[in-house]
Length: 315
Image 1 (tube, one colour):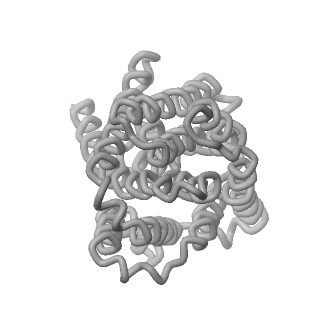
Image 2 (cartoon, one colour; image 1 turned 120 degrees about the vertical axis):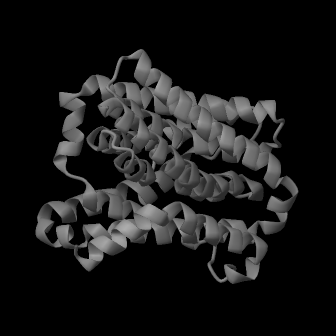
């Protein structure tokens, strides 16, 4: 095995522990991460999305034509279930407007690249996972601001135009550039693609460390309730995605991909959007940071469970 593949596999396997360790360090020793400026979040996310673009191929979007039913189900589940769960949990836990805005933003964002990695380790349908992530990400500039505004318009001011511009610049342009480079220089990108999990993990760690360290004191005062909401949001997302897969009689591989895609969000994007669209609400960035840590942990655990499900089915 090449050294690049070994490095990539290491970061894939231990991503949850790495992110957890970095976030814990930033929380208990904030000075360790205060050197990372909050303005870096957008640039770090651009790097992650550029890496995602490097892995994408035309066949990822061909699923819209060859398997439209599954893609439509995945998109509908993503942009209906998670936003409603976020809003409902915020109401049930009586969160203040800033935390509610942050939780709802997590719910209205598309799935992230982590969902594709976790689907791979779960022996799920990776092609479907990548297809759903790609389509949901392309729909995000319209759906994320629109749904966020619909859910929050009576409680906080939502800067829809700022959110739209942020998604275009932080998500779509980097992905498009990565996709174009992969198309023009595929031989080169194939040599470095194995390192992308490492790059993504470092980017996610830096985003989480930035937000956690700069909001450590505020997390101490409201961390328990935020963590409870984040955990429930994530686990209910997994459960709803799994239930929908079963309802539509999908194969185990497709059901796992749908479950993971619905439950895992692009929390880095949520953190970035919170800082731009809700600049006056400092705590709005906290739910995204907590979700970044938690969903990698839960995803690793879920992958182990889903692998055993495969083994049992094969007996």
